[in-house]
Image: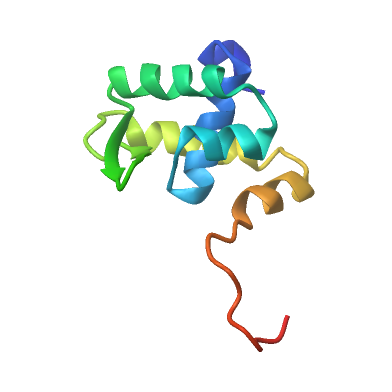
Length: 109
């Protein structure tokens, strides 16, 4: 939907993923969308070089998130949220529903 503005579909995917989950790393995003890892890594690198994202190391993993000091962060997030509202409900739910740790043993589903 925003490909004409952002240049590539993968950049759009990276931004939607980070908007929904606050942070992520390239391999996680590539697996989620079933796309080539290198193309996702390129988008993370370009967005970080442009100041839109920042990264930090957690163990051996480089986590990326939106840069709170980016001057156009609020308008960008508003645009992404508006565009995300036009996505099918299943896709929006899949983006938001991400388990990062296993369910506690014995916990009801």
